[in-house]
Image (cartoon, rainbow, N blue to C red; front, side):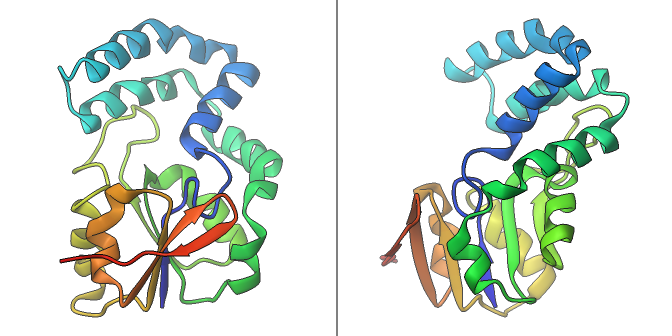
Length: 188
C-alpha cells in the first residue's frame, strides 16, 4: 500500500486555504470570521497558541456557511483538476491519504478518486472544533497504526519534512517538489 500526504503532494496547493478563499468569494457571509481569524493568526505566529488551537479558530468561518455540502461540491468541481497527473497515473485502490487537512474537506475528492482510506484531522464541519489532535507530525503514524496496526506502508509521499515520523514508518519514502519526486532517505 502507498500512503500520501495531500496538500502540495498530490494536490497543487493547500486545499484548506483554497476552500477558505473559495468561500470568501462565493459565500460573503464567511467574511464575518475574518477579525477572529486575523487575531488568532497573529497569536499563532507569535507562538502564543498551538497549531490545533489556531486551526480551530481558523475554521470558525464554517459557522457562517449554511450550505456546506453544496459549497464542497462546487469547490471540488472547480479544483479537482489540481490533483497531480503523476499521482493519477499511479493510483491504486489501496492508496491511503493521510493529511492534516480536515476529513470533511477531503472526503468528497477522495470518494471521486476512488480512494477508500482517508486519515485526516477530525473537524466539526459546523463549528470548526477539533476532535483530537491535528493530524500532522507524530500524530500521522499514530493514527495510521490505529487503523493498520503493525502494517507498514510500502511507500510514503510528502512535500514536508515535518512528515518525517510517517516517512520513517514506510519502507520507502519520497519528497514531492512540484511534480518532481525525490528519494527521501530517513536517518533514525
